[in-house]
Image (tube, rainbow, N blue to C red; front, side):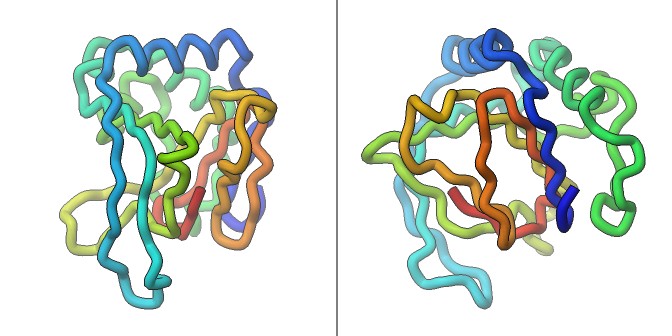
Length: 174
């Protein structure tokens, strides 16, 4: 782990990545999104989003469809995460994880929907408690250009199946 960014290479196989992609694409509606977002203090003026999102706000999650993914995530994580960085710790089972996950989200990018500006996934006054983000790269690098995840000052050179975990309060961009 480097400065709160945990990388687990090859946490998911190519076939498992395809299963996750198919689960999102076959069960959820693609939601294209292009918008400018009001900036938080100290954020650049050009903050905007152009992406396609597939959002599971609980339907697939409640069915247990993601439990095998949660199990894999939990098996991939060290149990001794830095408490100063990950104060909430990690759940101990897929069921516990399911009860603490607010939503599952898959972003897709294209020539038109091609960026997600610097942001954090926590806002002190939004009434939500988000402790960490988990990203899984579902596509092989040779199938796209760009799409580099940057977490804080670290460029993430993700490969298909790689998993990244970092505090939701860490600025990041794609």
